[in-house]
Length: 189
Ligand SMILES: [Zn+2]
Image 1 (cartoon, protein in one colour):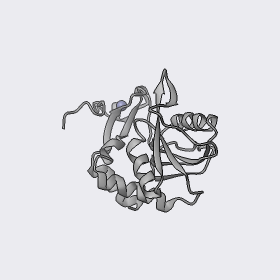
Image 2 (cartoon, helix red, strand yellow; image 1 turned 90 degrees about the vertical axis):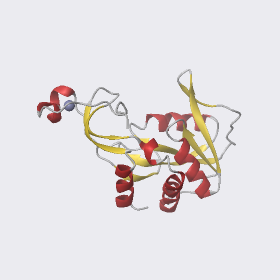
Image 3 (cartoon, rainbow, N blue to C red; image 1 turned 90 degrees about the horizontal axis):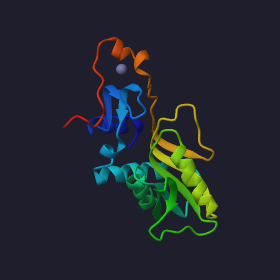
């Protein structure tokens, strides 16, 4: 799956929407990404996992770790393509935690996998948690990277980089043009 095919698929699956959207941050944006819609077809999710592994030039991991919820499906597919185990962190009292009896061996090399890199916050929190347990983060992967100029402190790979513009309502050209803002996911399909 190359970048053009992925972009077409994101649009066709409804994962990439163009219009006039009110984001959870309160900002307005001409586009919106809901990666879960692109990952709902297992064969397609598998192709994305395989494409990430095929493009990876860093060290081979011993295990894949994803922060729930967003990273669960794509992390599982990346682990399948590498032929390694997959575990995930969840927030407990707002702290990224390994639960359910999951553990990390000391010195285990891991890759953190997410659906979308937005601010990098959950990746960094997951990384800190893994390193506190003695594991070594050798990289991070995502389907989509919308971090703009921001980078992560380890090698990373994304299938698609999206430059998404989000602005406050008073600076929004779509509002100025008289278009009505829509909250993503509020429409019934
Ligand atoms: Zn607007």
